[in-house]
Length: 298
Image (cartoon, rainbow, N blue to C red):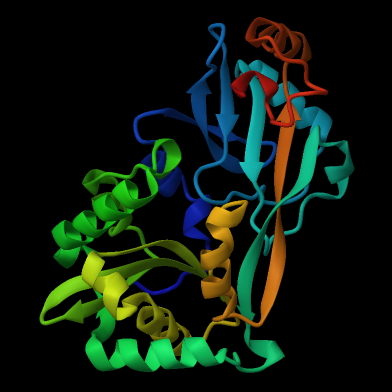
């Protein structure tokens, strides 16, 4: 099983290449980050995005220099979801996009122990009674985990960024800093949770359960066990939730394991302003009315 490392796995070229799933990747020397290169939905240009689920420039940089580098690489825009534990550069006010995106639910050990709500306490106790929860090697459980994730895809009609396949998980299992917990019922994996460990923090990456896992509330036992196993890390992030009523239940579930929260920001830079405007026009949207960045991807 892999241990946490100083360099965040999300910031490594190896992880970005895996998350790109066949797309080309580019190293941005100005921001010291590796990004996925995507064909735009209109025109014949390309743009760039940070890998799922988080990215972060590594150190200070000038926005003007980043714009030039994007142009030199033939990239219209760059978009990324900023790691909530990493500071944006001092020049962040020059970004073309820098908005509050999602609240992530966090455990901060320096704020004291988590005080589980009563319902969480009962569900944790029940889950640990009905299931055996332990850390596992993802490679040894790749097929049952993949079936759990296929169940999640079907349950929530996931697609695009979240439609991960077994090849992705096989590669993920080999990345240093990735650890997995599983809940077993009569020897069968009924719930799993993949985590990414780096420095003083642990990130929830992906979690999934079977019908039996939902029935037994196995995920409650997995999350509680994770907080015990990762007790040496100051921060444990359970991530965010979808917008609207669809995320209400998940919000209550995640917040019940945490004692803090952090706002994650969505950031973007336009490299080629003329092409950016041309693509927006071709897509039939204006940058000031789309409510989405880049607008031509609405």
